[in-house]
Image (cartoon, rainbow, N blue to C red; front, top):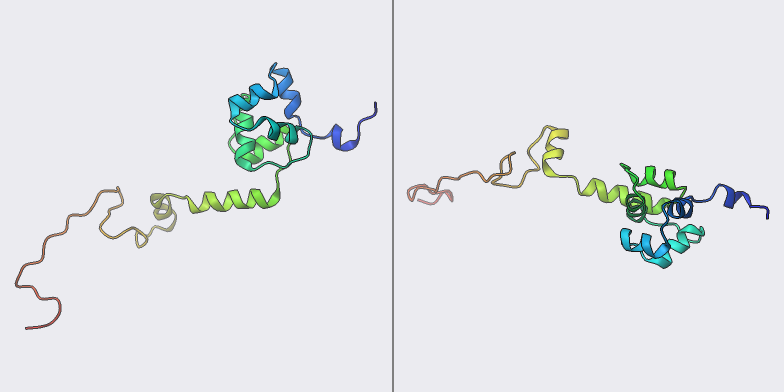
Length: 135
């Protein structure tokens, strides 16, 4: 049987799963990805989300740092829009301290907080202090 180019260069998910003597059900249980989704991915009928690719790679024992790296190892094509969506979510989830490190600015820090995450103590106003300007 002659394989098409797509099949020859297609994803390796099933190859790695079978080498590890796992059924699709085993991989589904270990990864938390539905068995039917695994079948669709293995047969190039579905392009998974980046987080799904990471779950599958980790369940197969690969130590990867990104969904792109996992997709390359497994030979899986991810939807370009889903990759862009995941990158945008990662940028939005950036911690406040990291933002301060990048900008060198604490202007974005919530009022009353310090760089170490603790609250600043604020002295209470004296009764004689009038901030409204009224006498």
